[in-house]
Every structure is written in structure tokens, then in C-alpha cells.
Amino acid sequence: MDALDTMGRHVIAELWDCDPALLNDIEQVEKIMVNAAIESGAEVREVVFHKFTPLGVSGVVVISESHLTIHSFPEHKYASIDVYTCGDRIDPKVASEYIARGLRAKKQETVQFARGMGKLKVEEQSVEAPAEESVRS
Amino acid sequence: MDALDTMGRHVIAELWDCDPALLNDIEQVEKIMVNAAIESGAEVREVVFHKFTPLGVSGVVVISESHLTIHSFPEHKYASIDVYTCGDRIDPKVASEYIARGLRAKKQETVQFARGMGKLKVEEQSVEAPAEESVRS
Image (tube, rainbow over all chains, first blue to last red; front, side):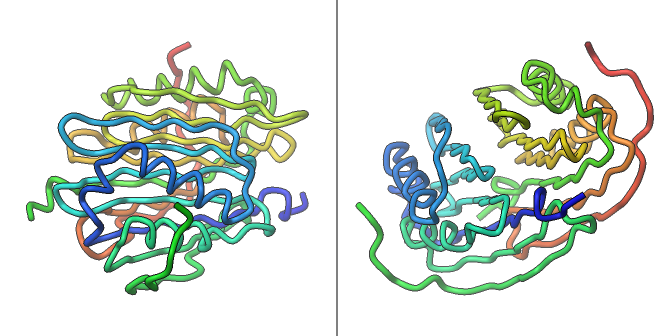
């Protein structure tokens, strides 16, 4: 088998000290997630978001290259996100950083996995404050 | 903050040597994923599956407790799955094992993460052959 066919990179990110109003705004969260996918160069296939009562949003953006997901906890200023991209054309960190900036996370912890290559391995692990940059609005 | 509010467990599983016909059958894949969620005791909120041409299925089951995802590569008998469940009521391994059996995986590699608890940490990592058991059909 050609490992390139199944290879992927999966970023798991824990975003802390986000803007709680944003985290509870399903339209904003969906926009940030979809734009993150586009920004990374992914092709968006399906978009599904769900608002919980009273607080929190869960959502998924299915892309040709795999998926982006989010689960937000406004009351804890926390969002749990995943960006998984198959192939080597797209860098999932571009999308995860975009989301972190969009949600105004003051702290993030990320782990990046190599997938589809045989042994599951952590490629990268970091705890950092995302750069304060503008996001598409 | 009460860490119990944000805690979750996330299983990343790489399923190898699956049944390639099943991996390419969107209805079967969707049924296995939804039943895996139900079997684990999760509450299904949204279901989105996408068939790629000529091969492969991507899909997501959004549950009240987070999500299950799959990306299948029938030509490589490989499926890449995630089961993420918030709270401590549901064991994501129940769902991931159900999916592995359902897709007739002969080999699987899994990593389980604790999420929403501060430091991201691997709770468990294993490479194994799933038990041959019947699944809901």
C-alpha cells in the first residue's frame, strides 16, 4: 500500500480563556469553523452545528480531507477542537490557529498526531498563547 | 471551575484490515456508527455522512456528549475513527470497539486522551485485534 493515500494529520486543541459570548453564539462559531477550513485550503462538504440549552455549541465541518469539530463550554471559556486533514496538502495547524484566534483563546494546548501511517504517533505537543491576529469576519 | 463539567475522553482508533465492501457502503457505515453511539448510551443529535467517488465514506454522528467520526479507505481496508464523549457516564471504548467489530477490523490501534481537564494526556494506548463478536444488524 502507498501510505500517502491514507496519511493524515490530526490536531487536538484545547482552547482556554476564550470569549464566552462568542462560544455561545452558534452563528459565529459556525462562521469561524467554516472559514478556518477555507483558510487552510480545505474543501467544505457538510456543515452541521447544534446549540445546547442553555449553553454551548457543538459542530462539525466535514471537508473532503476529513473534518473539523468543536464543542464549546461558554461557562468555562473552554472549547475543545479537532482538525483532521488527510493528505499532505493541507496543514491542520493553519485551521486550528485560525479558530484559536477567532475565539480569542488566551491559552491553547495542542497535540498533533500522524494518522494512517501504521503506528499512531504524536508529532508535536505544545502549550502556548495564540498570536493576536485578525480573522476573517 | 469544576473540571467535571468539561472533562471528556477521546478515543482515536486506527482500524486496519477491515471488510472493504462494508467500508464503501455508506448505509452500513452510517448504521454501524449510529448504533455504536446508541450502544454506548449516547444521545444522537445529528447524523451526516458523505460518500466519495469512487471510494470512501466520511461521516459524523453528533451526540449530546460530543461526537463520533469516521473516514474510510476501502482500497486500503483502513478506517480512521474518533469517539469523543464528554462527562464520565459514557465509555467511548464501548463505541470504538463496536465499530471495530462492525467493520470486521482484524487489527486496531487506539489512543485514549483525557480532555477538558487542563493538561492533555494520553490515558491509554494499545495495539490489538478486536474480539470477534456479533453486532446489532
